[in-house]
Image (cartoon, rainbow, N blue to C red; front, side):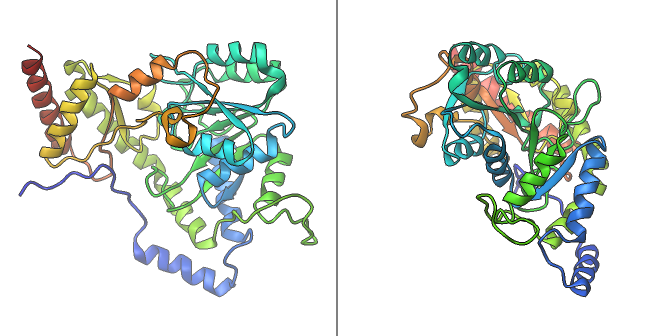
Length: 379
């Protein structure tokens, strides 16, 4: 029987290493509520980004989005801009926080949210817009970030950057994600390259905003445990933070390994007319997303991969504006035609620290077989 290649296979610290961390936590008798390990991880994340930002550890990336939106968006306004070509967590956070998402199309080359769509909407509706949720598609750095910051400043709006899968990604300038916009949100879910299990972080250059996030995630308490703002419980445990510290130490090697695997995918698949997202070679690469020539080619590729024992996905399909909860949303910018096209053709391929060159070659063979079959059927 051919060995199955899973879509994702997270790598976690060894049991012995975590046992020593757990033993130290037991000795201190501090398990949550901003303990020393959480503080150490927050400082380590700050050093990783650029040593000029603060970080608030939270229970999940989705919780981080809700906290960031609640702390920064204008509560007296109705709309929030967000791409439809993204994971549902962002639009869901917008709706949970009481705003109505306005869906943006994406750029056909970069797959990133359309700056032109956002500017056009804000020209007419700026006074009723509460904020911008800028998604870094597949965790890839958006090279138009400065233009987005200028647009947000022009309309006096907060810019929350959703970099869920992007911790470890960088811009062409070598700047790391985490220090842009009003704040930036990361997920450390088990599927991410920096995997803790369930966890996330909000980072910002504004220390007062980080203090506000820390307060909201802890029931809105002040130093006297008096609830002074509407809060919740979105804290992260000491043991989770210990996992995070060990994963952060392993991140440079993990990034180098995964970017090397992406290079193998490119060598094997570009000749088939497969297109890869620009700057993905500088991203954290929780998985590999590629654009196939047609929706028929993708359907054939998925079927052939499945038959070959290879697990693949179709992120983001359907795009969020077609999810049942949002299907009645009355606002979208333009036609979202690029979003629909990408959603019909993008395939997400396996990535893990255990993936070998032989595995990539096997995946590529299945893709070639699928293309050959699709060409024959189309004649």
